[in-house]
Image (cartoon, rainbow, N blue to C red):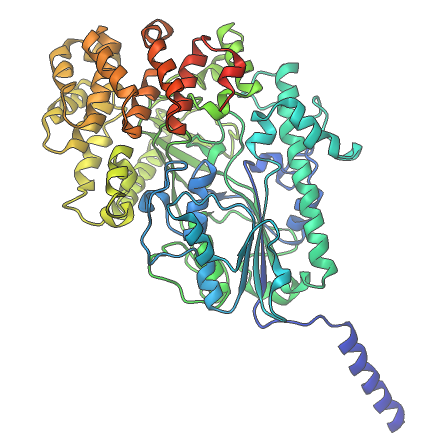
Amino acid sequence: MKYIFKLLLVSAFFYGCKTSTPTTSKPNILWITIEDTSPQFIGCYGNENAHTPHIDQLAEEGVRFTNAFSTGTVCSPSRSTLITGVRTFEMGTGNHRSSYPIPSQIHGFPYYMKKAGYYVTNNAKTDYNLRNGKAFIKDAWNESSKKAGWWNRKKDQPFFAVFNFEDSHQSRTMTNPYSWYMEKIYNKLNKEEKIDENAFNMPPIYKDTPEMRKQFARVYNSISMTDKKIGHLLERLDKEGLKEETIIFFFADHGEGMPRGKTNGIDYGYRVPFVVWFPEKYKHLSPWKTNGGVTDELINFEDLAPTLIDLAGGKLPKHLKGRILMGDNRSKKKELITLSSDRSDNGIDLVRTVTDGRYIYSRNFMPFIPQQRYIRYMEISDIVNQMRTDLKNNQLDSLQKSIFEPRPKEYLFDIQNDQWETNNLADDPAFHKIKEKMKKHLKADLLERRDVMFLPEYELYKISETGTPYEFRLNNENCPIDNIFDIAFLSGETTNEALKIQLQFLNSENAIERYWALLGIRSQPKKNVLSYKESILQAMQDQYSPAAIIASIIAYDLYGDQDAKVKLENFCLSENMQDALLAINLINYFNDEQKKPFISTMQKVYELKREYNVKVASLDFLGSLGVVENNYKNKT
């Protein structure tokens, strides 16, 4: 019996050695990101028409988040926060593809994981929206390329590996030619993976027609392709015996790439699908129920850098202000979070948002610009052209038309009861307390963070010649945020009292205050401003060019002033790209008759082949008047 007992012990020992997977003292972390996708197009979020079996399985076995938000509504600002852990309105990286410097002491968060012994890889998208990108990437990652992955690490070294799948990107769902989509997406799906054009509910914000369904089916099939590729990656992880050692994160970089989603400071632009999967070994790190758990906890991209560094056992740098979401050092939950949306490509904007998950409040600081603003990358798409044709032919209902109309200064939506944000509650007395609570939080948070994006881009460019916007904003003498906010928060107010204050600020010694006073006047109803012609014409002579541009826009719009026209033409052709971009974008929102005198100027801008954003802005102008052929418009 003793012999048999020893034999059983030895057999058990060798059997255990043979079948166990080598473990590490720290979890591996796999980070799967996809692009331009809102949760309502994913199966595990309740869409029965979506084909997302691999994402759904991660959620069924892991934790699904219902209140996860990107900190921006377009890719490069969102990725700026993801990689640095710092909000764009602190870093100065809110404007899409702006390439401003950041302080040398701020590293990409994988740098701190490297210091803690991790092998960190990125496959392969960067687009971090900051200057000296190559040096920053080299500093942050062990590998960043299309060949990068966990497979080149040292034996038993824990890894952090990012894989980004682009198949749901706006280029696939909307802007690339339909023939490209058919070849690269649709024809590569199996029959059971394809979603038919009539097999889903059309969101009410779009007209339900065969032409629109043909285009919108691209969303579903592109996400299906994305899910398929995610499945291949997870299969490899499992085959290599690593799944039970790896915590898996899955999320999108911001909301859906369709019109009204991406680039817009509303829930449809911010909210993302987000799932975390824990192997049995590391389930103790999860504060949430796993195996199909669902949490309504508020999280945003600012939280991911500190969470990952803490999971790796690294030391958190002082500049990180986000929460640690899991583990022994988990931070306290938040009741409200602040989000932001700024320029996308050539389309200027500034929106600041607060949400508690159910209600979302957005303050539009340039309300005269519609949700579907002129952005060249979107204007070349079939779906936007179809929408503009339907608008011209009066084929849209009031909700669908509103995408092309000036915005109110505020939005308040109840997402629990109004997923597609069709009913603005901002002026409803029943929701006054909710709105006021969110407004109060918004201003306090922006003041505490010292939101540098309230400076015109002209100013950010100048600051970046000798320093960084991040550091500049910390000096109140250089950047009196409190005073700037006082006048900026009047933009969109349409009362005579607000107008009188705005007119008084035209004489401020602070150029930024004059700029915001004029943006506020531009946002007033025309009838309110008409009798103040002398003040507007005088403001046209402002030596601060952003202020002079907006004053000239107002003067030409209201009075047809020819001096204003000449000034605007000169600004469009300016060597200063920020001035040219501002002038061209604002001219885009004149009516067709007002635009016609600028046709020759815009053609000059195009032919000069200046900086990309200026060139595409001029094409939006020309395209809106139909004075260029499609192949000419689409060259960019």
